[in-house]
Image (tube, rainbow, N blue to C red; front, side, top):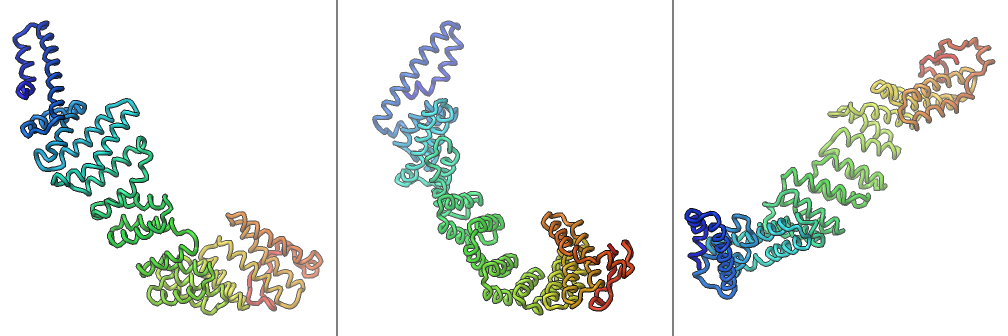
Length: 454
């Protein structure tokens, strides 16, 4: 029987050479029936017993058809090999791998949805049973590769295996346990995603801590972990706990420290904020850190320390990039202590850094209004100071891009307009609209600025 099957191609060639076309066609039909009958007999015999002498024949039959992608005819012989001689001929997992490929090939070739799924189910059974079968047979195989490919197989056939998608993450986690050094960053990210999507946040955190140790120095994996941690910890309490843990691991991360300081202040945790600020400023002083602590001191009324910290921040690398905010806040500190002239100097310095800084323009106007209110008199000359304040409010309204600031400046002008010198005041002082008028007298000698009579 094996001799006849082995010579099927040569026999067909011989017949073609010696017979006429009609006889040749009939002969081919007879040969086809003979080969089909012989194959059926061979399969039936193969299924009944495992004969060592039949191993080469069955292997050759399945291997030839598999090579030609004739998966349907290769299947019975491959099944025989897996049952009777799974390690033949190389003691490798080749036959088991081919069984998966064969079932996938049959699935792709089918146009029927149920049949496609049925063949993939067979491939799934092969993935589930092959490792144990190979172990029993003493076949060398890579468990990592088989487990990984199983996960890829399920993930790649999501449309036909929707109910199995929840198993993909755990399978990749199993792969990680086998050898994390071989697993790419994409699959690490998938494992975390799977845990988070199943609301296993604690497991995700534990896994990320482990990954961080296993992949220390890997920039791609580190970036993935940082992104996930930023998403996982959103409430102030969770974020504080996360940042505290991260800073303990990475004490050189200034951005995290600054964020933690902000959260401490936001949550009213002043003691922790000051304790950490003092420690950080000694070890890793930065302009941003000094500004953050300076603002905290300003809010708590410690104006002297606030001014010192803000002033020091300007001397540090990158400090002048935030000059307008620094000078503005120093001005606020002086104003809180009643040092109006000093406050005005700082606000003007802020405007020198950015002439369109709306907050500083409004602050100067407010300062002049405060000066009038604190002078103790309300004569014509006092009222004239409001013209100067209005100049700053008008300019603030003209340069403001945000409607809120624009409306704020305009409202201030409306609030003081009723205090402007009256027509009678201007008549008695001989002030004509459009004339320049300088505020540099009495309580206002420190101002020394000119405005226009309105």
